[in-house]
Length: 124
Image 1 (cartoon, rainbow, N blue to C red):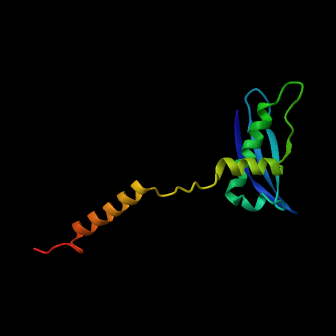
Image 2: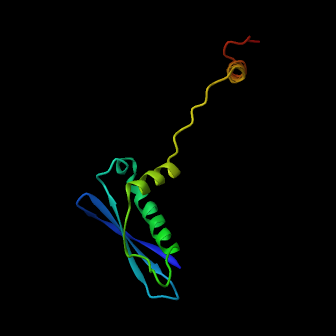
């Protein structure tokens, strides 16, 4: 099975991403995935993230498809989907406190670079 991204359209307060699903055992299907642009999480989403989050949504829908319950062709991205995607793809930066051994290494590196460049060292 192949999922092809076919572009997007801009609508009032949303973007609608289009996908085509090619499966040799079935006929081609066209999916749309709508992302609201007026939510708290939508502002953290970059334009280039749109196809990725929507692709994942189509994959999820297809993974849960059964003969009795075919995949829905018109899908939506919820605030929960946006929050989860942002957490997975943009984790908060970890801040690391400088400990004493890190300070020593930094001072030693600086001193070594000053000596090797001739700055502050003896001249022959």
